[in-house]
Length: 150
Image (cartoon, rainbow, N blue to C red; front, side, top):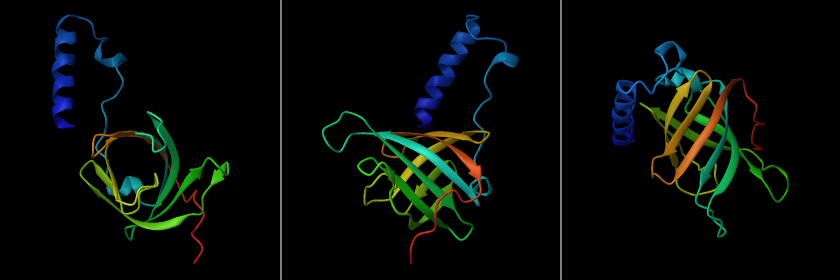
């Protein structure tokens, strides 16, 4: 991810030198560093785009995760067959630098999902740590996910 960012930054310098970029006041803000505090007591509403599991070239999975201060998260994903959210499950979460990892994949895989995120206010976007998926989402204050059944 850092190599791609460096390449894009270099490309941006070339465009700026050529006068192809708008003035600084007209540009979108640079991504802000994300902090653990930005996630605690917030729900991430997200769509992950990745390789399709049923022969599709790209599959979109909609999901939500409510992040708690104790390092647990309540996660649910959209079940297209039922046209409703699947029951919520409890998992773990961690944010180190720009990498957010969930102990239970919200997209249905068994392994932990990690994504390198960037933030613009309450909007987040990123690339899967494996380089095979993209994420687009937003953070909302409060728990928008039902608690899992015990």
